[in-house]
Length: 176
Image 1 (tube, rainbow, N blue to C red):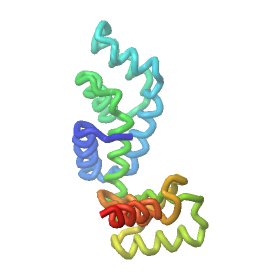
Image 2: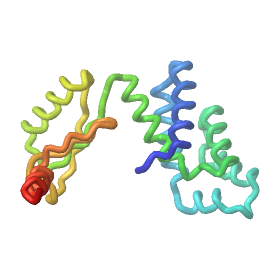
Image 3: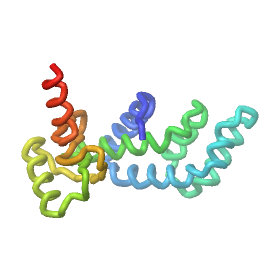
């Protein structure tokens, strides 16, 4: 999912509040629950309908989030007032990333041509941990187009050790 600048700002603001309160885990759990409860297409369509009043939209959210803590409801109300409820999943994703970063955990997306064997995955994880100085959690993907090797995305870094890229470089050097 693409994270917009707006979603990053909301997530950062909520993260700062949660950090100040010492309630990162509670906020994380509640935000995920909010995203699940408010993700229904009919809820998003209702919330995005300009003919429906903000008060009616907020009443629907209050009903859907019954029992949720007041600050969480305030966030949902703010998102409705500003027409940003559809960005809640991206806000939650960015919030989760900020929490992992705060905890010293980095998420790495590792793409290989064939499924990565467990021992190879552990070796990649160990090497990435030594490079980043963080605990690394792997998210594995398979893409036969890379032919062999692997492509790693970790934070804003890209490590492309794929055979497809090496062949492309060789082809351009030979064409030269």
